[in-house]
Image 1 (cartoon, rainbow, N blue to C red):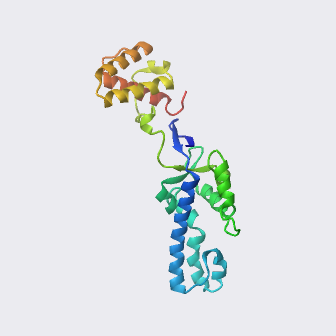
Image 2 (tube, rainbow, N blue to C red):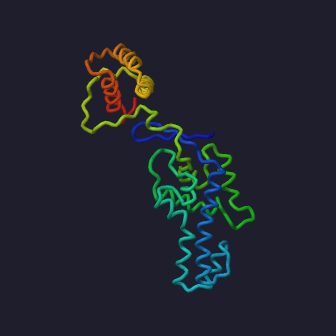
Image 3 (cartoon, rainbow, N blue to C red):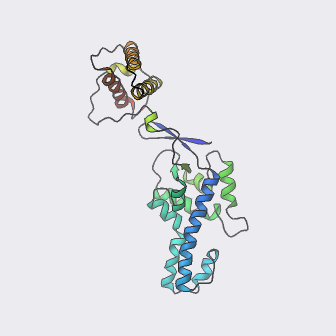
Length: 249
């Protein structure tokens, strides 16, 4: 399974599976089904004989005011991704989503670039519908079609490989006061192990494990504290996150 690591503003890296070609094809088919249902509704109301690939021809048999009814078909993907934060109805059903590779929220411009190059990636004017996008997604490491490459986006599965709970991230208040400045001698790896062992000790209700962890942290940092073991370890995590969570080391 191909995955991608996305940085966050808290200096934490989260790992997501990249949506497979199959995921994206099934999402596209579901979107086509939605558009087909909408087209069928127009067909019943206006008795239009033309098929979806020939929308331009259909415009010729409609009053100008009614031609606006075809705008949702033309702008479907753009509107959906803007309104639903990177998802069309098909993507929502398949639990996949468009994101930026740099971790920043995707913008309207990003979605617009993807939509504009959909004409190239998912062309329906040739016998090989979508062949450009399919090949591009299949051969690129990050599963990107041309529109994705230009917008610096890709499509991921919403099920993360790495969760916030698996990281060293701990929420701290803006006015938080550091209790143990001695933790500056710890590394990200040290704190990651600390959190992993702390979580394991709490889940398994293993006080001996927590006591050993407390002793080890105090030995490495030289901290002297009378706090209860759990409170001490959690305070160390909060201190570290407050000091280094925003800027890293």
